[in-house]
Image 1 (cartoon, rainbow, N blue to C red):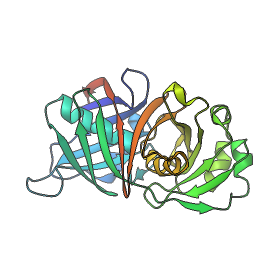
Image 2: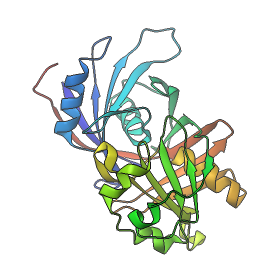
Image 3: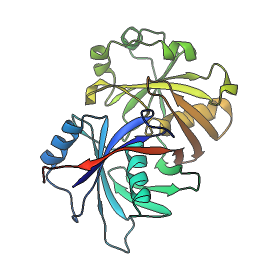
Image 4: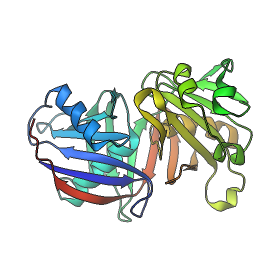
Length: 273
């Protein structure tokens, strides 16, 4: 079975967010234990598993995502990585429709080698800033928002880009503060640098202290910053060590996420399900 590692939301190797991708020949998924063990072995923030669906349905491929510790409802970078593999191998062209836990997702390839994902917009609910979150992050929190069931993160606004970049969280303390993780964000210090806002994402509860570039988080960041900046088309920089840009377009209940991807490993998985 072919297994690939793809760097997503980047145009060069060893940047963006790496994801494992396995395209299955079967008409269903193997046992959940096997899927979780493969994700644990790959040991990246997400490993995506996809199998083809019969013609004529609402979707072309079924798609699931696993961290090294658990399955998740929605993942942007591993969806981008899967679409990249489908297009670069000739298994798909144009727009690909995926059936996932969070509904039908689409991925459309462009001539410049980027891919646009069509995801549900995360509903934002303002919250009172939780006790202890500022201490866990090591920075004052200006506002806090719940991001809904499929993302399940706590989005927190910080004072400025420098504060976001300098965070050194207490990961054990962060576990208590959301269903999945924490999205820390602030406006860009210099919008002429090519991005409108910055973020960092911490998910110790699902086995990922810091995720390099998180597509699903941008389904919450897009409406958050569109409301503040007055524009529906924005670019976010996730300021992790690997870093990556996510271009977002807010369309009401849907958010478009656009970025590039690069395959860095193409190998063979020797353990069959």
